[in-house]
Structure formats: structure tokens, C-alpha cells
Length: 373
Image (tube, rainbow, N blue to C red; front, side, top):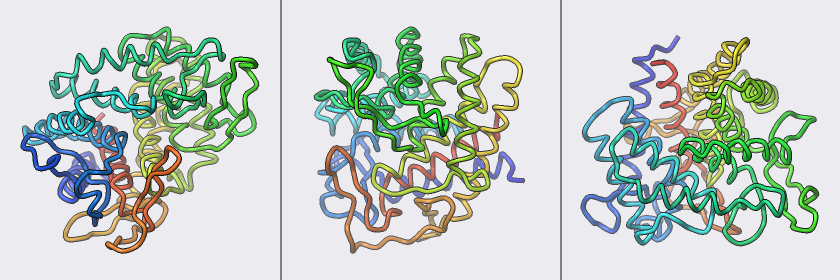
């Protein structure tokens, strides 16, 4: 059995690999850092002309995990410089055109402020106000994916709901969780669908997008786990049913299965982060211990598989996009990740993408946090 010390060492190795390969000052400006989207990088990536806002939010968030783990001044500096680099690269703003992106940045900044003392109060106020105003009651509730259009999806509502719960907007967070279950739960599989086209004329009958992503399950688990603190047992019951569905339909031997590069490189990491949160934080009365144990089993099995499947490049760990198989070592040739239709598509070799490596690091930090708890 892997010990807490070993998990801490694995998380530290993941941190070192991602920081050494990917993290650079923004345009050479001291006191700032961001993650280069590919390794080996294209010239465009190296210059941070492409940078992928929401990948950087997860890089910041997992760096906060690392600071909680090691308490090192150098790790706190990393957190501070990533937050500063993101603000600079986003032209001194915190907002953009995608509510899911902004939600992930809000979650990362809130934790950076809470644990590492980053001054993010003004940015957090802006984001809170943005999400509160984005709710569309005339279309049956929910917030859109983008600031234009009316596609309402779990990837935006899930993290926004978690963020609002943490910022004390519990009523709206409750409304968000209920909306997800009313509009996007698939009763046959027990899993959460991707999204639905909103409609002002017929709010309850928009076109459904039935894709089942690990991302969607993760944020829904996270939202109900946050809300379970109020003692309402329905949140723990939802988490129990969803973990059971995930275990049956999205794992192999308790290992989260499948995976890709591009934006998809973060999906399994999101699921493992919020499974770990449920394993530690879920409340709800009788049977909750069993639910926490089920979540912990998936976290530890998945992280163990991710570590076993990793390769070593230049003395540093390289994670696989799919934790059920070994990593493939990327080269500088072949298609690099590219943006189209609101989504970043995978590099030809997914392991080239920063998102994949952040996902592996997230798995190590999740297991380390769980082992410490």
C-alpha cells in the first residue's frame, strides 16, 4: 500500500515535471509565470500567443494544492506569480467570453487567496457579480456556456455553483445543483449529460446534448459535496448515486478510464479532484462513510494507475492521457493542439499537452491530500 510519504513524493515529482517543462515568465517579465501549452512547444506556444485561459486556472489551482502539501516559500511564489501572470496575459482583466473558464479561475483564485494570501478580493467580487447576473430564469434557469448564446451546460454550471457556494451565495448554488439534476441527469445511466439548448419560448424542452464526460460528473459531485455541509441528506444521496454510476460506467477496476488531450486532458483530473473532496468533506448522516470510502477507492486506484503508466523524460515524469495505458513520449513534429469551435483539440500525441500533465499532477495531489487526511 502506498504511504502518505510516497504520495507526497509523487506529487512533488509531478510538480517538478510540469514546472520545469512548461512554466515560464510571461513575455520575459519578472515576477510573472504561466504554463506553455505544449512540450515540445511550437513557436506560437513558446511566445504564449496561445495560452488557454482555463488550463492556466487549473495550473494555479493545483499549485495551491502543492503549497498546502509542502508549505514551501518557493511554491507560494509560484502561486503568486501564476495569479499575476494570468492577470497580465488576460490584459489586466479576470473575465472572458466563457462562463466555465471564469468559474475555474474563480475557484483557483479563491483558494489562492485563502491558502496562500494572494490578494484576489477585487477579482473575486467581479466574478461573483458576473455569475449572479448570468442566471437566466426566463429560460428555466442555469447559466450559459458563453456570454453570447443560450447553450446551458454542466461544464459552466457545475464549477460556477461550487464557486458561488464557497463565496457564500448558497441559495444560488442550491438552485444550480437542482437545475443540473432537473435538466441534465440521465435516469437510465445515473450520469450527468453535457448540456441543453436553452429556450425562452419553451424553457423545459431544448435540444439535449447527451454526451457523458468525466468533467460533468466531477463538478456535479463537487457541488453537492459543498452543499452537504448544510446537513440536507439529499446532497449526500445524490453524491452516493453518482459515485456508483461513475464506478460502474467510467472506471476499469476502479481506475478512471479513457482520456484525451486538448481540453479533454483536464477532464479526468477534474473528476479525481472532486472525488477526493467528497472522500474528505461529504456530510449527510448514515451511510456517508461508505460513500466517502467508495470515492477514496477510485481516487487512490486511479492515481496509482496514472503513476504506473507514466514514463520518464529527461529525468522527469510524463503522464499518460489515459491512466489505463502507458504514456507515449511526444516529439516536436505532428499536429499540436489547436482551438476550434470554442474547444482546444488534442495534439497528435496527447501527452504533449499541458492539460494532460496538469491532470496527472492533479491525480497525485488528490491522492496525497487523501492520504494525509
